[in-house]
Each structure stands twice: as C-alpha cells, then as structure tokens.
Image (cartoon, rainbow, N blue to C red; front, side, top):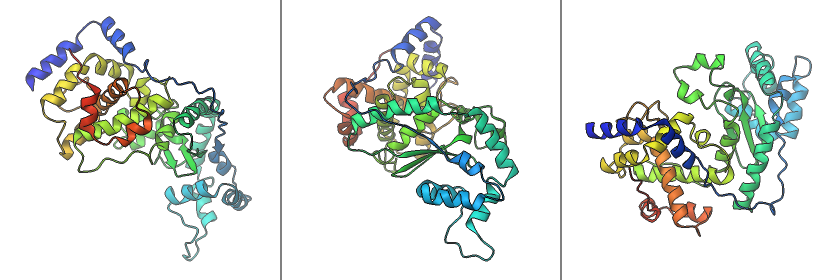
Length: 352
C-alpha cells in the first residue's frame, strides 16, 4: 500500500500544464451529440409551488390550499405528507390539515424568512427551464415512448433536493442556495462542505435528470460486488452524458475542477489501486462505503483523492465500453447486467 501511495504522489506532482491538457481530454468532450432536430421542442414551465404557498395569509390560506388540492393534487399531497407528516385523513381531535399546514409554512416566521431569501435568489428560473428543455429533448430522443413529469418548486425543511413520482417532480429550492448559505450551518454535522458544495443552482437540472432514471436502473444491493456498483453508477453517469452532453464533468460528479483534474491525471494509478488490491470483487460494506459513498476523501489514497472515486472509475469504464461497442444504445447498456462482461468488452485499462 505504501508503494501505491508513492506512485500516486509522483503522478500528482506532474506539471499543471499536463494536468490541464489531460483534463480537457477527459471532461466530456466526446459525449454523444445526436441530431435531435426531429424531436419536438419540449416546453418546460416550472410551477412555483413555493410562491403559491407563501401567498397564503390568515384570511385566505384555506382557499389557497383548497385550490392547490384541486389544481395540483399529486405534488401538493406529496409535499404535506412527505415533509410535514400530515394526512388529509387524520381524524384526531382539533386537527385540521389546512390549519396545521399553514402554521408550518406561510404562518411560520422562520419559513417565511427563508422563502424571502429564496425569492431573491430565484426571482426567475428561465435558465433552468431552458437547460431542462434541451435535456428533455435528448431524453425523448433516447426514450421516445416515455412521459415527462410536471415540474414544481417548493420550500421544505432541508430534506430532499428532488421529490419524484410518475407524473410530478418537485425541486426543493432551499437545497440549492449555494454552499455557504447561512442556514446550512445549523446542519453542519449532517451536511459538510463536500456535500453542500452541490447545493447550488447548476445542480438543479442534473438532479432532475437523475431523478428521471430512478425507475430504469436498479438500486445497489448487499449482494453486489464493488465492480457491480461501479458499473451501475457508471451507467447512470453515462446516461447523464447523453441527456446533458454539454454539462461539465465536475458538475455531474459533484466535484471541484481540481478534483476532476486529479482523477484524470491519476486514472491509471486509481485503476491499479482497485485492481491490484482485489477490491473489484469485494462485497464488504466498508469497501462500498469507502469508495462509492460521499466522503471528503477515499480511504487508502492520497489526501487529494475525492470521495466516490470508484463511481468516477465506473463512469470511465462505461465510456470506454460505449466507445468500443458503438452499436450499443442506452437501453442495451441498461439491459446488460453482467458487470465483468462490460469490463472485459470495454477494454478498460488506462496506462501510466
């Protein structure tokens, strides 16, 4: 292991010019850009549920909430159920859904202060709607028979970044206020900087598009090897290459530019680390946690190595697989569940 560390540090100390050159070669420039001219333009209008709820006051809140129940029933029910633990069927004494919801939202001073700040930062979402309109066209290109959800924004108690079901997708704007937003400090133990780094505007479109894939790709299981998990996440990342082809790799991974540059410059040594230590076929929970989960660094690697480096490597395996198998489309990729077969057919094996 000491020998591997020395190799890492030697590679990391190469000139910044070479790092930049390598980064430009590995930062999504080869992403597929199919002709989507025949795909109808997608009209994206994000309904500001957060502002509608904030418009409630002691004199009109029952009407405001009643209108939401009629016009936007699915997202409104998901909002008050998932965030506030409320139920329209609760028969407890002195309980009224609209009364309780108002007390927690527009009738709550703290929530309204938060909403005021959100309304300043997100006075409009034109740029997000434009980016999603193009991403949805790519999505329809690859999945022409799929349907797209209605999009809503809301304010919640810092729980989810997106809330998705078959027909609606909610965007929790208080989770995209910038990594140094003051309110996040109260949650510092649960949301350190390497996580709140992703709590920013550029990540809205990314998380919306990731949410759309939740039903297509299976969730990791205890029976998976590290290689299985790497390839599974690599498929998700390659899908993002397809629907967000011009988005920077750093945004897709939730890395800084320097972290992406480090991974690109040290790709061969990262691969030697996983292959040489026989981690690829490990099913140990600790190994999954160390190399697939969010973390400030990756265990056993230099301090500069970001967390989730196994996920980044899985992404590069899938990119190599798709280059080597150009007749494979996204559905073919998703349906191939043999991770070792994918690895072999990818020809992946970066050299120092």
